[in-house]
Length: 522
Image 1 (cartoon, rainbow, N blue to C red):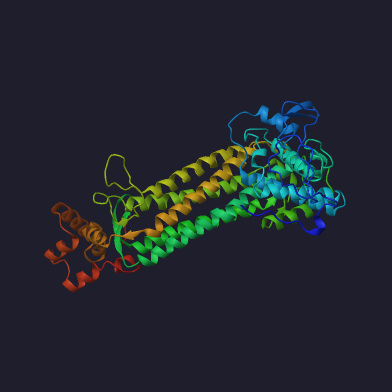
Image 2 (image 1 turned 120 degrees about the horizontal axis):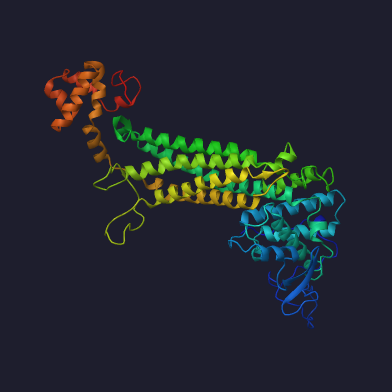
């Protein structure tokens, strides 16, 4: 868990009491302080505002709401918590961290614009730092299946940051003074531009920090295996049937390229996530914000996250359309297709150990059966395959949700955050496990591979330019019928002089362009 950033002196609120030493979760009404040695006094604990029996009473535009006294959220969060009892799944941590970062950047921008008192701005930023550091996770109880704009989650963050800031400034939780959740924490913002921005930032960070590095490591490890296995000539297979020889290094080089290309496609789509909606406010017009707010806020958000964020070229599109995340999800699905191919090939080539292909030796990680002693399964391939299935299923959800914009707003934002972050994190974890616990320990059964390639009837392909396609096909059928190798049959029939036959059937040469004759087949 990252440490809490230390505010600069210029950011420290004037006359701010010492940071409270009480637990992060408020525990009830403040008690009168007993006589103690001279020392900084802790900030007051939350107090009930007109409440009883462990509740405080808050008011919003719809009237009074009873909020548990120990909670840092407010009336709007409480209403949403009661209304959306759907799945029990709350917004992902990465999304909440991104949302807190936006509030930090917005407070800084509004302070610089002279719109927000430095003491209040500093208190908001300090509160946001606590959320970014992982504190107060239980203060965000809103179900994913909520209002489609994510307004409930935006207000949840506004209320929590307001209460943390007010508590630090000496005011009771629920007072909305001196930091108001709407007037100060949400200044210059709307749920309609903040939530899409949090969606893009959280997914972009997850991809940058975990998925793209995981794909790069897998591609590099496969490339290492390609070099290590390059001297091994094996049976090629097309249509699930024997084909002409290929080097194991060439096969693994293909796997490495598939994964590297997948990472490039994800990176291309990732760049589109760096265009954010912040500044569009309610419908894209920017109503309610300073003309310079978005430039400053996005700049601070870029610095905080390490992402080269930029304002959406068209704020109306950025609120109403979600094609950037549909594109990104498509790139994830494409990566999942490549990873499925690699994971399946490796587990099939490692099948056996005696009655399958048996060309690869997979690392033995755990017993594979509760009834069959000694059985070992390709568990890391299976883990990756299931993650790929999840991602591809999510892509369908993202595509449907991405087209669910009506007029000036898309109203599926919490769902998009859930499935995209779930897909990125799950795929990254599965790729990391597959790389470290499967690919890194792969070995080739060289003896079995040599035996199988020598038995291949497709060696007849190399004879076709010498004796003709029909004669070579006849020889392959005869060898299969009589249980002989192509080499043995050609030697017995004296198809070619011995030296010429050896050169023609040189396995290594058959894996390179222009060798092994001129004929080819599918």
